[in-house]
Every structure is written in C-alpha cells, then in structure tokens.
Amino acid sequence: MVVSKLDSIEWRSELERVGPRLKVGKLQASGNWQGRIKSMVVYGDKCSVEGKKVEGDLEGVGRRVGEEKERVRRGEGSVNNLDEVRKGKRTMEEVNAETVRAGAKDGWSEATAKQRTAYPHN
Image 1 (tube, rainbow, N blue to C red):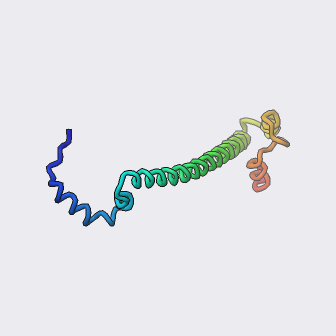
Image 2: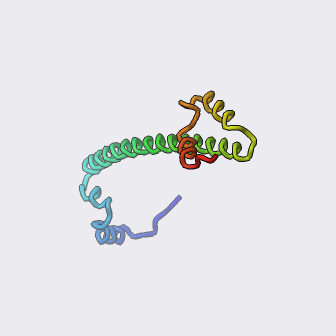
Image 3: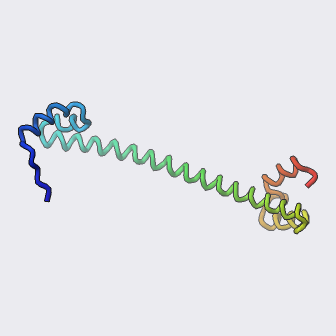
C-alpha cells in the first residue's frame, strides 16, 4: 500500500502553483463533482469522435497497404517469369499460357507488359 508523507497544506499550495499549467487544471477548477463529471463526459465524447476518425483512417491505410502488397506480388511474379525465360528455363509461350490460366486479361500482367515494352529484346 502506498502512503503519502506529504503535508496536505504543502500539497495544496503546490497544486495552486502549478495547477494552471496542467490540462487537468480546467477539470479541477470546476470545483464540484457535478462539474467534474460533466467535463469528463465532454472529454469522453471528444475522444469517441476522434477515435472513430482514426479508426476510419487506419482502415483506409490498411486497405491501401493490401492493394500495394498485391500489386508488388503480381509484379514480382512477372519479374520471376521473365527471369526464368532469360535463363532458358521456360519459353515466353509457357509464361503467357500460365498467366492466361491465372486470369490475366491477355496473358500479360501490367508489370510484365511495361517490361516487355521497355525491353523488347527479352
């Protein structure tokens, strides 16, 4: 159990000295419990509203991260496929057929199409 060794008069004088600089000073300035409870309700409402805003923002960030992760995964697969073609392990026809089976529109992912345009000799 914690027991204070401070004199209550010293504590009150210190609180009067630093109280105006504290955020809780406004809360304690209300003087009675009813005022303090009303202040806490107001602060609680503000926290609830801000919390919902933050929650929505975080959901949006999570969604965008998921989309970017998928985009990187697709691009990485395309790079790996082209690397296998370059090394002679597979032909472009095999890569194209596999990509079509995986559901790409014309057999090329967006990343692969960009690479094919940029490096037509591959």
